[in-house]
Image (cartoon, rainbow, N blue to C red; front, side, top):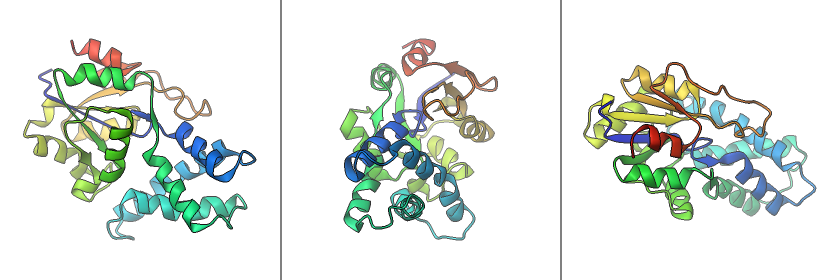
Length: 230
């Protein structure tokens, strides 16, 4: 493959959303709450909230605002409707404080020696910048949904990666832990690399170990770096 750039899904692929959100739930709401269940419920509303934008029901709305809206229903359903507004605002920032998987930063640093790297995430730009600065993610640019005002899997998101980086789609590798994300990227001419993240959902759902349709299937970013010869 003539690879020049790699773009990454972030939530679940680069960072552990479930562990980080649950940690902040406990910190802000107390140890008595079922923090993992709250995190799972919130994540379960992620795709439906973006679909309201993709369908035209809502105008363009950044992910932070969608998360804030979804949180109202999460807390109400858990009997926590009395949580003050300032605590809710702080909970939304939990998504800005997620920890990377242990292999993520070492693997990205190896890949950065050879390739242009960027997130291609549904997270808004401020969120991606905060994650990068917090953990030292070596991005060369921040790409994704807010840049083109479309949420994945809209084709505009994938098309923008090659267009903005000035390379052919076939020279861009989409790296993700989610088969649907990779399938949408392939449909736009991008190469794809699947990363197996068995702990993304806390063991409740275990994703397949490989993607037979991807150009590469690996168990870590360091294995990805090895496979690409860095």
